[in-house]
Image (cartoon, rainbow, N blue to C red; front, side):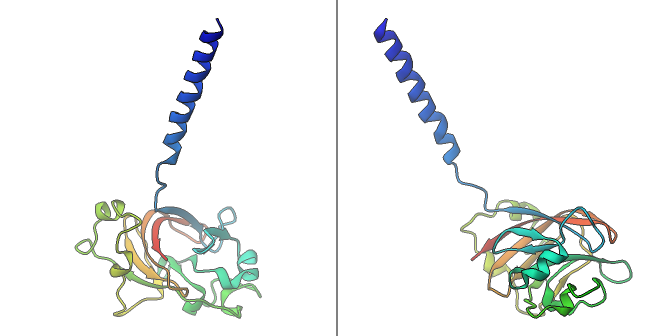
Length: 187
């Protein structure tokens, strides 16, 4: 009987060890973020790539040096847009916390990728060792990724020289809307 108990105990420990190995698979190199536009009261609108953290306007103003991106909607011109504090966006947010009033206004630059350069399928197949930085072009960089639509691809570089590529996953138009994107970076 004692041998049978030891045998069951050994089998349990051995199976637990094999099951825990499944948890050691490499994690995805992608992050998914949802940001709300300027009047969205339920989804944060500001994002730090370094910290992988979203912020409200008040929180972002208190953490200016960490903010790489924010979302806003401009129905007349740019529609749903991702940009950064250094893009000279004025009149979208009001009050002392508005990014145009910040002392630190880091800039992220964007370059829209054509499907002939990188397709959605190729983006989805990128890995942590992919040459992410080679997709960004310094020729005619933009300070806004505007008129965002599902499956748009943009290469970007942050003030801290993080190269990345993002794919738009979903867009809800309007000042209370949001944009969800999936990105990969190279530090």
